[in-house]
Image 1 (cartoon, helix red, strand yellow):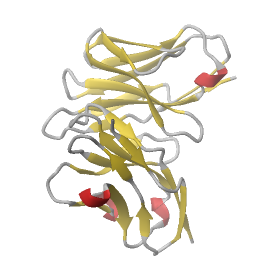
Image 2 (image 1 turned 90 degrees about the vertical axis):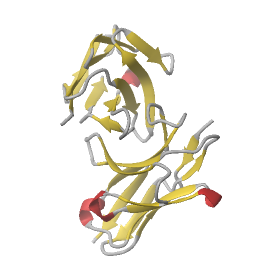
Image 3 (image 1 turned 45 degrees about the horizontal axis):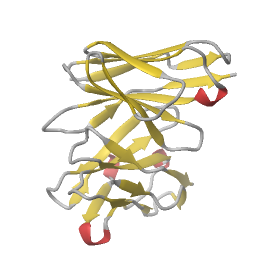
Image 4 (image 1 turned 180 degrees about the horizontal axis):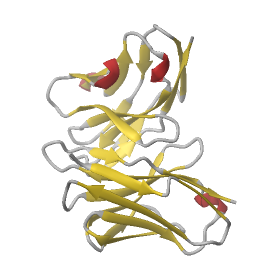
Length: 113
Length: 114
């Protein structure tokens, strides 16, 4: 069966510090991968998605970047965090047909102080 | 363009009462529709999905949803609420006929009162 991991689970970082969040998927190959953000009191915002190694699409311009160095690894980064980067970050993968469904990881709670 | 509207950002029901969470969609192509549930500080869990087969879809935890094309709706229901149903619920629609790209609603926080 497939599983998706995210770490760390929680993170408190000062403004201006760098960020690296990691997501890995097990039990599948060449999945589409996604990074979403939930800010307090708001819905899900798609940040990035990737259809393969080194292939990243950005949905919105922002202070963040993403990379996919391996087939089942997806990383979200920032060089200098802003207060507005605080939120709950979710990684997801797409199962492909026939299920054709996105499945989510447990999330990372990021607080920028 | 596809969009989802969830009416009611907060819904409160008494334990044992009917749960009704509303979702209306807009789509220029035949949609797939999803309901996800999110418990505090957790990821989203798939409750159920509609993929153009049966219009009444049964999901986990006793939830079901009915696809009504004429009303462009996909409301989520459960006959009897349980305290453990308290969570946030998200409706989502596919952007291009595949769940590779989803548009999410803004979510509905369900509170279950004892």
